[in-house]
View 1 (cartoon, helix red, strand yellow):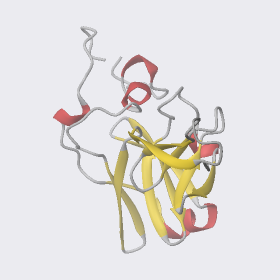
View 2 (cartoon, helix red, strand yellow):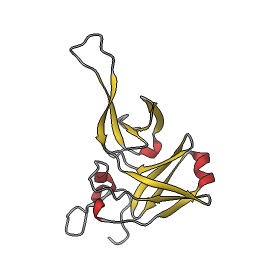
View 3 (tube, helix red, strand yellow):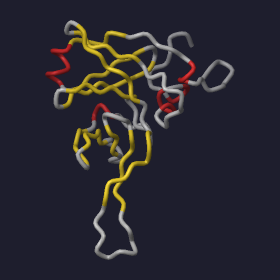
Length: 158
């Protein structure tokens, strides 16, 4: 929130790339947290790929850095430790299982709720890990916990 109480639009800014750590460190721990331009993010290393997203779950602000990575329908997801919400690492989609109640022989299938968690760009250069915050021009549900009064790390300018 701004001082006048209005919500900032994350899509209105362009962010520079920030070095958040060393490749060797994240490969050992398979995850790390960082504050990038006043926004808390978690960076995962899973099966040779890097993924970054807002650290708080879009549903209720759960700590995604404490969740487990599991695959659902062939898609790697972080599972929120609070309410077991499943979020794809690659796209930030929320996944859920659905079944047709009118079909007694129906099997549950995985469906998407759409993009719920803001995903950020990760690059590696000379052993350093860099994160560039998303500048996608849409609001994500996770923005609620990453900006304004609900974010955990508050700006020192307050």
